[in-house]
Amino acid sequence: MLKEGTKAPDFESELDDGQLFHLASLRGRKNVVLYFYPKDFTAGCTREACSFQVNYEAIKQFDAVIVGISPDSLESHRSFRERYSLEFPLIADPRKQIVKAYDAQGFLSLIARVTYVIDKEGTIRSVIRHDLAIGRHLSDVLTALERIETEASSADQSRGT
Image (cartoon, rainbow, N blue to C red; front, side, top):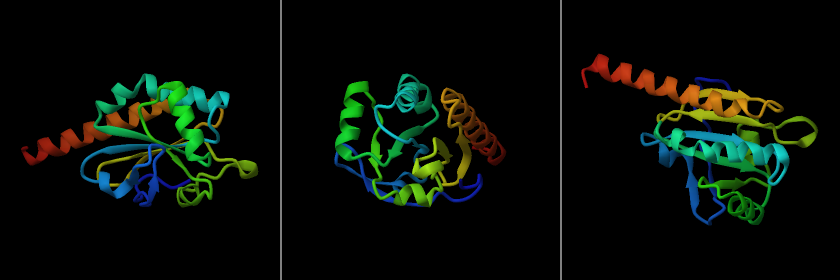
């Protein structure tokens, strides 16, 4: 896994809705919750995605977007999003290029269940990996986003803005 405090590797990829996603385009505008998961429609991955969806408004309040990545196809992602009414986009990474860039490879060629919380400057602020304790991803993400917001507010106050 990549380390906290490092710059998030930039990438471009097609989203499940056909739009192009470019991570760098969010710099200076949004915090990013970038989560890697093994497979659409499996019990754990469905639980994780639905947990993010149920709490999407809370995450958006921290000026953040969620993007999920797995090696499944765009068609699988579209079906997954539709079936579970997911409001956030998913990226297909069948050749695992983004997985490799983010060192999200797990055991036996599976994708690790890892989440990166990236601040508006493109710095990885939190790395969360709970392969089995899936429910902890959400609470850890919210804690990381709250810390980013608190630090940004403190910096603004010290600058007098």
